[in-house]
Image (tube, rainbow, N blue to C red; front, side):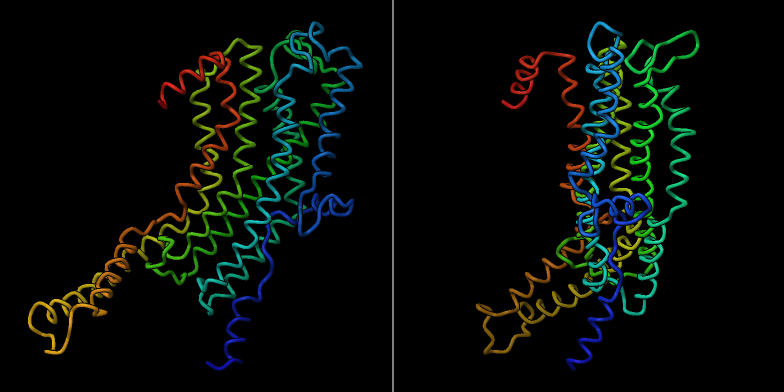
Length: 403
């Protein structure tokens, strides 16, 4: 091959923008300006500390100042509010930590589409256009402004006030008639801490929409899939890594649900089985968020499987007939020896290739990735089992199932 032509082909498959759904947007630019984020590492521990100092620490200080921090002052004092501690000390750091995992794992995925020759050279322009469109959405100031407006109008005034806040005397509010009177800590909680937390969460949904839209646009390109690829996904098996990258986000949703359930179990006399449908819903929801975007490739994978099964079936048919005619029907030459012949190994190789095609998946997700999301979602909820039985009883039940 001409070396100059090889260099030109490699350039055609590598000259495209770096892809990231995380390293951009107005908030990211602000954090980068104050050295809490950069292009290579969108999250730092200093960033987590800063968000905790803004959202959680003022609530502690104001609750202590108002005398609502310890037991005996109100029905639910600040130090015993499991929800607020999990939300700002566990869930929010997980949302921020997820940015590092997503940036480091999802960014190379776009490069792999071209590095693995999945995108035909005549479609590189469409692929680059999909990347450019995703980057414009990621950097949109209007999108983050609309998220802020949604958080204050819907997230705080409707969802939190009417469906999340408890109807009992708490460190953040005291019921009075049909309304509740917010304390100073409650004012900070309602208009600073909760909106910032909801903004981070909804901004993640926006980013996942960008990711899903990018994959959908790529799936509209006629990809150069290979049915005999050993990943059994025609070369798209590496996309399963994106599911692992989103595991911290799944854990954040599980922890958030655990926080909501804990307060209702401890202060509203509910029990864990009362929320079994809610737990199932959140599990399905996180699977849709993490695995759902990859389903856009199912039609191409199905087509590749059908065509591959037909073509490799025909190829196998030609080979086995030739093998049969040569070694079983007298077609071999007198000096041909079966022992040591490459024909036997070729027959085995043909069988293995055909088996790979027949076992090809139509969804580029491994069972291990699915299990990772399920475990990440349910693990934060597991400690609530102790509200139903003691640790000793739970351990005995587990051992009785295993042994």
